[in-house]
Image (cartoon, rainbow, N blue to C red; front, side, top):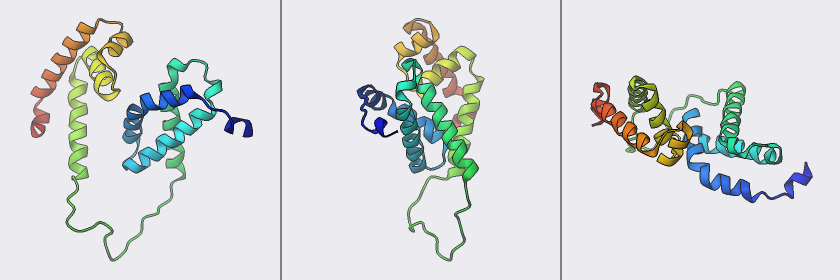
Length: 171
């Protein structure tokens, strides 16, 4: 194990720099707290770094890191302990208006319901473009279609989402 600490992987650094925003979004979808999401991603990237030499297909790195995120989060969930306790004073400072988590979750759920109403092809393109943060060219490559097809299908899908009555409060 000590031999691994002396190794440096420029390709790993380049991968992290390029994919960190997308991977962080994935981590945030697994946790309620943005700080926990950063910790989760850091742990998953550390596991990926240790296994870097053993990963044969570097085109599948996102999948490897996502699996590491999910496995790490599952382990954390299984080991969780209750570390909340009642106290006389609230820890939140007064006067700070945070967004209502229930309202945010309701909006998130409404958005997913609206996305699920889209035809499969449009849904795939919207998810790849906006949730996975792929470019139009990358989306076209993944789905084996032309860039123009991606542009027009995403445009139609966004139009349908704008018209969805469940998303009325957003507009």
